[in-house]
Image (cartoon, rainbow, N blue to C red):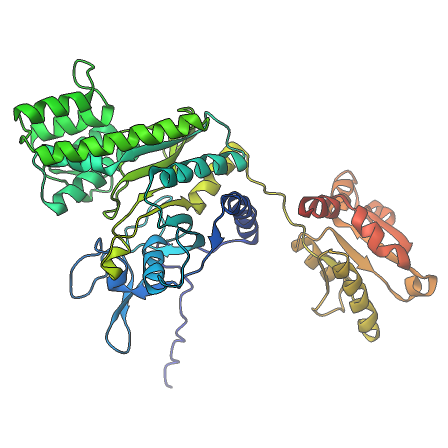
Length: 510
């Protein structure tokens, strides 16, 4: 006898770094995003949507130069053998859109985008390969006033979401200062510069000691994975750490030390006057934006200059900014840590130029939607009024389907979620079990007796559960039918609206 062949079944599983989203997560995101959108539109920004895929060369020079450019991004070849990649962020696609439509767009161009972005990176706790961002950008505005608007808008957004002053700060720095410092200490290789910037960008995650390792030979994480460092010398590392902390070993200004050491060509500094000029330009821009913000009552309690703010992407050319939440939370080990960054951005005057050949000034800010949601949950600020399940109209008589469906239509017209039971109606108990599993606020019961009397039975499932908990035996439960009452058929919708779960949801939608 032939051996029965084993049936192969595909295993249900998710790729690492990706996740399903529940109805409550989706609704919470939509409510939070609506508040962000309201602030952005108040500042004069309009919506734009770009596709998930872009040609790989359009995404930016931070991508690796290899035959199959999939490090950091998810890529595939089109049928014409051109490489396409899932977008890494929402800024590079905007630059492509502006360049492609530059003759039709009214400058300055103020736009916001919301959407999923994808990173082909090692997933971990709170680190996903697919996540949502919400961006706003001003293209065609060269002055620091555009950067100031970005920072003010982010401060206003934090407060619109219920994050009070003292629990957040918008940190501001200038890449010209950073680039000048790097030039001055002899870091001229572009790849090494980027490695230094990305090391500094990890300050809130790894602390000063972790950054010190990343500025040097490298750092090994808890899993044993090794991240190669920027390869700076000891003197260079020492000065970069002083720069991050804003003061030298005697408490003096790092900027003053920098200028003095460049002028004298001492230590690890190279006497690089171009570095000094670049740093000086950046320092002046920081003074200008600080004066503007103070004049508009956005003081250091909301927006402040911070030399440790760098941003890790290569395309920033001037101001950089980061929204940081300053309240403590517990990490995976139960340790108390500061929540950290929920968004950031900066000036990128060269990104559109890659397509057009001419410099087009631009500044933008990106919010990490999922991370910001986590922050709001920690603060108890997430607008998470749970949507009740639909009111379920039970089917007691198969010949009266039209009548039951009419009940459903009346409730829907009144803004109440409702559905008619679609399963096998033979077992009434299963209909109530279904409504219970759907978190329904109520079930509507109309049999022939109710129809003859012109009434319906409303079973308040939420209140019924509470009442049933106090009843000791099944006989009493059946006789008292907790939470169940009858109303005139004509009053059904009005009575359903009075149920606490339904009323709370309808009020929340106003």
